Length: 121
Figure 1: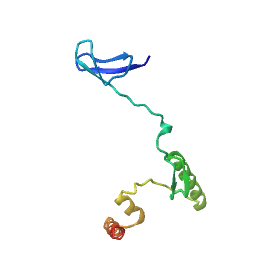
Figure 2: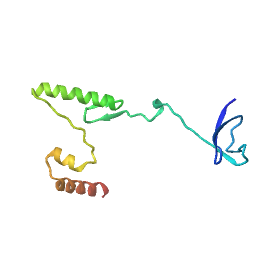
Figure 3: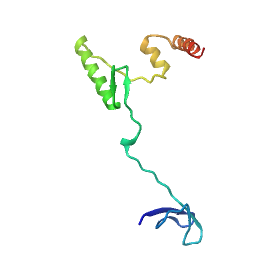
C-alpha cells in the first residue's frame, strides 16, 4: 500500500496508508488536508544546450562553456605571450559593457535607445 501525508491544524503532520483523498477526518475530528510533494530528476530539466558566440561553439552546459572559455584564454595567452584576463559580464549590465568597449554609459544608453527605436518601428 501507498502512504500519503496529511496535515491537521491541531495534530500536525501524519501519514495514512490507503487511497489518496484531498481531505480526511483526523483522529481529533478536525479536517486534515493532504500534503503534496514533487520530486524530479535534474536530468529531466530543460536542456541548457545552446550556440554560444563567445566561444564560437555549441555548448551542452555552463561547465562546458567555462571549459572552452578557459581553453581560449590559454590559447590567447600563448599567442600573445602575456597573461589574458577574462571577466564574465551580464549583457544587461550597462556600466560593465560601457567599460568593456571603452564608451561612456551615456553613449551606450544613447546607442541602445536608437537600436530599440529601430527594432520597434
